[in-house]
Amino acid sequence: MSGPGEQSITSAGAAGELEALRNGDRAETERFVRQHAGWMLALARRMLRNGAQADDAVQNAFANIFKNLSRFDQRSALKTWMHRIVVNEALMLMRKTHRLREEPIDELLPVFDESGCRIEAEWAVFQTPEAVLQQSQASAKITELINTLPENYRIVLMLRDIEELSTEEVAEMLDLSQANVKVRLHRARAALKKLLEPLMGGQAL
Image (spheres, rainbow, N blue to C red):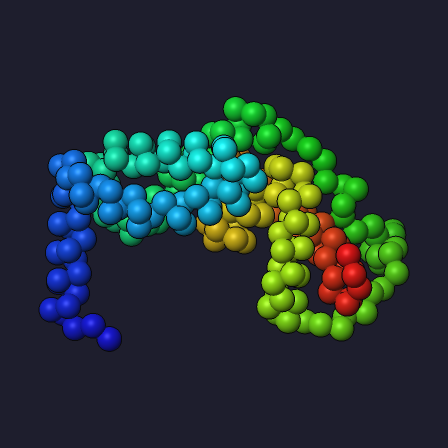
């Protein structure tokens, strides 16, 4: 556990970094870009699934970050603030290419009869979700299955369950009501669970 003196040094260092960036210090700016470009690009690629668009989103995000550093009030961590900017830039590109248009998800959802019982046959679970996720090949398949969801559902699932944004934040970013976000998230999770059933049952996909 760090003591008060160490925390003060850390805070002072962060403040000095911000001041240097705000003053346009070239060496500090280059170091800052090298430090953050990797995770920003990975985030943009998860959202956009397009390398060129991800590059554009990160470039736009950096431009936005440097332009608005003077407005950063430090009420949240710098990386949290930057994460939100990258997400917003990716969403803007998705809107420009009409990728967030409304699409149905009903054909991917489980089917129930009038009494509320699932019509599909039951499936046997041979592995826990945790065990499956530990397998790199299975993790890649899960990502692939997430990417098969309609875009307007996939992005809600990603922002809430992978990027761990709050319902309120996702609603604001997507210009949706919080109730709508919750409904989409529930339906996206249900569809993903159904798509995962062969994998969770130990079957090859």
